[in-house]
Length: 159
Image (cartoon, rainbow, N blue to C red):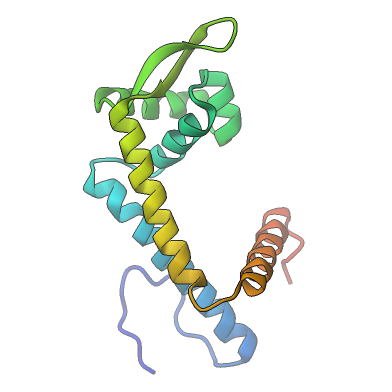
């Protein structure tokens, strides 16, 4: 099978051994999934990372900058840029949070609608991934992907 060269493909087709073919499909699927997740963001004038802030604020019903920074494992400087961009687009607003009423941020109504739409988009993509699998197979695939990513992050999966 000949595959057209595109800027989205980072690795050329590999030999058809079972391991390499499966790994190649995993890489290709990851790239396509990333593109599918980023397209709706850019269509709405958002950037990669904005969705993570939107989901975090939705889950916590508001958060302070240090809490968000820790949750998202990002620097306060990067987070300030994202918050400023989302605030300018009426997606987040400043509000006191916690029992001490510390300065924080929460989603606006527009931000909540956007979060719901993004969550629905994620569900559609997961349904496309898991569509042919029964519940047991879904759990096994999720567990295998989690183990694989942990190995890659710790460097234990390197040959």
